[in-house]
Length: 321
Image 1: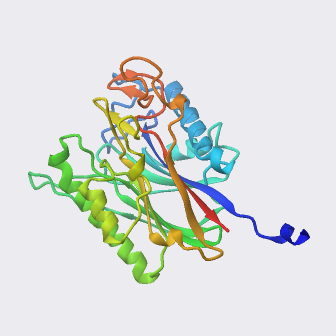
Image 2: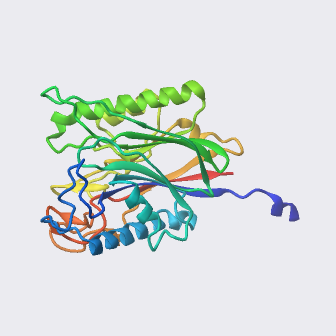
Image 3: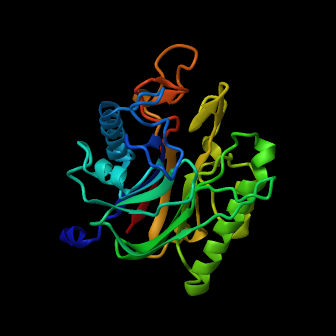
């Protein structure tokens, strides 16, 4: 019937998250420990290498979820960006310059100078509010342990209220057990942020994304999941031969999404969850050697590899009908 022409079509969009492994400019910031990412360091981080990194990361971002929705992601959470200048260079880079990406970023107190950020296509998502939440940690010597802030961005996604929380939780560098309490504290802080959102809007639709430095079954992630009855679509994606980052030939799925259960409501004019996946295309992997299949990194230690990142991106597909 001709009436079918007037029926509203389902719109699908990609929401992605990507830890892009040290997107630093080439200049030494005296306030942070970034001297190893300068031209005079052992890593010999140069303008040429920086531009190559921008081009490659831009190419990846432009293709996340494209097989599913036939367009670039509407939203991309990022970890390990140094400052606003590198984000501006990224959105102006070869593969992203024709899109309508804007970004939200706050400088965090992290000692290395790495932050989280949110890229968004402003033809799809309109930012109404953003806030950076400090994660207050004390080390074993009673000294403040500085780390990445947690970023909240709220706005209208295709005209519908949406809240996004971007994370990069404390690392396991000094040991999983030894650092576990830090990630539990991060989980508690995210729980408090969701409490704030639900106090103002009981049916708030929330996407929590990030590099949690913990797997789906880790106590920190499970604690967060249970706190607000969240759904973790990533749990079934971790296996012996698949994840988002690997260490000592063992896969982890540190990069995840958690979403509120109202993404499953069936009413009209609502944002709905469709699927989640790891964007682990072959070109993002080491193609030979003992690390074959693992993420093709920019650096391994101080040795320049010229790859993309030590993490694969992850993504959600959401729809509005």
